Image (cartoon, rainbow, N blue to C red; front, side):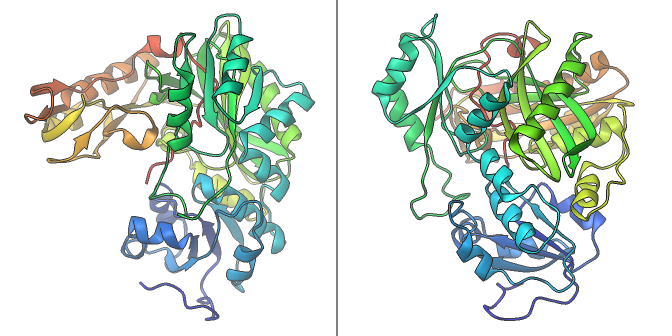
Length: 459
């Protein structure tokens, strides 16, 4: 496969356009779309850094890859000029978080269903989302835009316990997010957050960003995945989330369906409807995160206008049946023929944890795969790879996915499988075999914050 030449006609068979290379979505799109029917638009820097040309060629559905400045979210006119409209195009979808605004702009320019440019812009800027939620009266933490450590210090001094969250307003996967206590050094914390980068996932030119300080909330955390058509929710799922302890609130696991107090599901559904209205979201998939105060009162963490990462869409499919990605294509194609499904099974993912050091070997993957109900074991590092402290979603070393007939059964299976995988470190690490550690149920009940972007895009 080669890059699409400027001015050359788009292949006649292209019916769908994906903005941002969505590696997690492409296996689904290969099943759902005819060969040669997908055009992908991505930043030239990202194409080079991730070696996307040969990766795109591995997928039968992909017809062509076009480069365009999709990360210039304040002015997408150059992207609109660079991407020719395929004559047979039926839908435009974001493949990754950084493609949400570009996909909405293309769909709007071509008269196709989509999130809408205004809604996409709100969903891509956590400060704008906070403002929209405030106007709508949606429960959420106290927050403030901050431009330096002194402003964070001032905000933290106004909290009752001296704790706060510091985070970028337009990043993903918990990048740069920190949970700060009263004694933490804010000058050092500010440098960490401002310096957090994704060189393989972002254009290398200077891109604007802002930063937020927020109140830290305690409580169980869930995400809500819903399919929306012209502002109407057609399907809704609630995912239970586990989060690792410490300063960096990276997800340690997800489970579908969430186990909730009786009043929680209805309250969550109500605030999701309010969020759709507050953002003006038109058509697509929303992935919103909420912290449940007292186990049943949702407080908004943040919201993305795309299919979630971290294999959550696969968990939804395993639990409910059907296909969340197929539903996504259905509504983007102008139809509301989406079935309201309820969970028939339970599904869970646990992310593996390796102590810091250089990996010598990874053992136990066969044992993990042999655990009943386990359907996937993924190891993202190999011998010679250096593993540091996990501070964002991209730094996790692997995961296991399992299903079960009950919440207890799937929890037992997925944690048994995760515990079977062992990372052996060489002399540069802590030495000897180290069992993979997973999130535990206690992680979602204390110390949670409003500081993360729950999809956790993976490359």
